[in-house]
Amino acid sequence: MEKKRILILGASGFIGNALYKELCPYFDTYGTYCNARRSFEDNKQFFRYDLDEDDVVQLLQKLRPHVIISALRGNFPAQVLAHQHMVEYVSENDCRLYFISSANVFDAYRKFPSYEYDKTFSDSIYGRFKIKIENMLMRLPVSKYGILRVPMVFGNTSPRVKEMKSFIWGNEPIEVFPNLVINVTNDDRLTQQVHYLINQDLGGIYHLGSKDLVHHDDFIREIVERIGSFNPIYKRVYTSNEERYLAVLPKDHLLPANLQTSFQDIIDHHVLK
Image 1 (cartoon, rainbow, N blue to C red):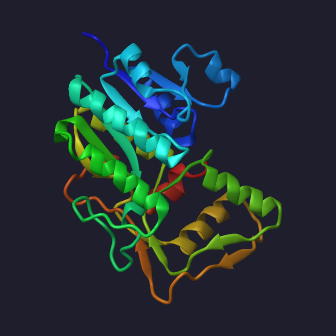
Image 2: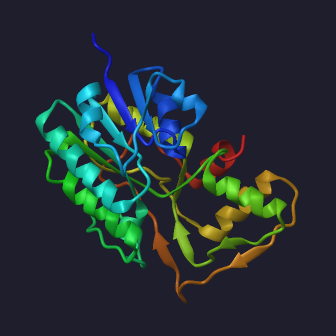
């Protein structure tokens, strides 16, 4: 039986590369990179793709993937155009598109966490851009797309943890938001969840974060304690007088218990091994 062919757009980034490492032992997996790095240039499974210069359709027609995972970053208008082309391709071929979206599609709602079928509403340019692409996908049959909304993503090599380490070692303040209530995930758990969705041929909207909530400052302080014995400087940032939520909780599309996670799991097992 032919292995599923998977194309990860943005496979040189933190999340895209974690997905590539998770999926490549099981599927015929390809990835794209933009900025040349020897490890990607030498890997025959990787193709150079520049959002601003290249047409994604040529790559899709060459590889004929069964699954596309979009973990792209970069110029927003160029991303919108690329996703328009992907949606056209998916609608005409035996293919599903998984789009890594964000909790920011709900960042205008401050009083509650958000669930899969809540109406999206954003104050930020980033959130509105993600909503635009989500709306494109939702015109496809549900079997043809997966919208994967993720909260803050941590992990050993995550940009967030690297930045915290550099602030600690540089004696610079780490920003914490005492009034912000979030849920979280990490690269290990996120990639396992995406692997499951692909295996089960599942489409629709999924919230891939911890099933519980935590204050941003409590979470960051506990992670920093795991990094080592330091006396970090914290800069407490208040963006509102009340508690505000930026959390995407699963309700309608629950994954199996072994794939669910809590914020304490992320701290204990996944952030810093």
